[in-house]
Each structure stands twice: as C-alpha cells, then as structure tokens.
Amino acid sequence: MRSVIRNLYLMQVRDNGISASDYAKLYPGEKRMLEKKGNRYFLTKLKRERLKVVLTGGVFDVIHIGHVLALSEAAKLGNVLIVVVARDEFIRKKGRTPLHNQKYRKEIVGALRMVNLAIPGVKDMKETLARVKPDIIAYGYDQKPILKPKGVKVVKLKAHANPNLARTSRILEKVGI
Image: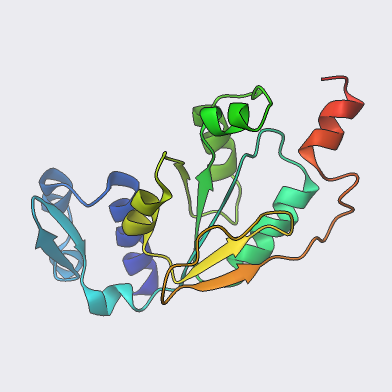
C-alpha cells in the first residue's frame, strides 16, 4: 500500500499535481487516495501523512563519493527522497561555470538508487516547498540551512568522506578546470 501511495506522491510532485488524463488511467483504489484541487489531483491528507518525505539539494556538477554518502544518509531519514538540483544561474552566481546543464545533472542525480525523484531548482524555493511539502529538509555538512519552515524538521548531514578530496572544487582543481 505504501508503495502505491509513494508512486502517486512522486507523480504528484513531478507534474505539480496529477492531470485529469493521468487520473483517468489510475485504478479505482488509487483514485480514492486522491482529491481534486483546481484541475489537478493530489493525495488526501490522510494518505500523504503515511509518508515521511525528505528534501535535499545541491549542484551535483561532478558526482563524487561525498554526494553519494550524503544522499544515502538523507534517504535513511524518511521513505521518500526528493532532490533539488540547482539552477545553472545559481552556479554562475557562485562564480563558476557549470560543466553540465541542469537537465543533465537532474537526470544523473535521478538515476541514483537512493533518490526517488530529482527535480529542477527554481528561482523561488518557496515554490519547491509548496510542491514537495517535505517533512524533513536535509542540508549537506557544508551547506547553510537557509530554509527552516515551520513544522519541518531541519537536519544537518555529517561529512562521511574526506572534505579535501570529496569536494567538486577540489576535483576541478585536480583536473585543471
């Protein structure tokens, strides 16, 4: 039952609500787990409460062991892991040109076993919070907790790999970029 709820939730987050055409393809039991809001369908409050959703994010331009360990740790905090992949403009604002565009990075992160869904970051993180409605926000050991919404647990992940070796900037230095 939880896997059905999880799949409906992931569909809801991925598409910003389940469309009428996708709703029509669902089984009657799945339809009973949803309610209509506007022209989209969403899990009922009771069904959504059966999930513990963890939200985390990052750039993920060069996937390394630090990312894998952090995402694995974040995944253990709940039963759904949603990962926000930073916008290209965000990386440029930090003074670096991304090696890979956001779409590419989102696909790579989404392919990792512990990640249930990777979504693109947007300009206003409040949009992402409204879309995901996380129970937990997990920040990497080197990230500042910038969002602390009321009712959402904020967790700071530990560094499990040597930060001098498992940092994108150090890897890029080593390869001469």
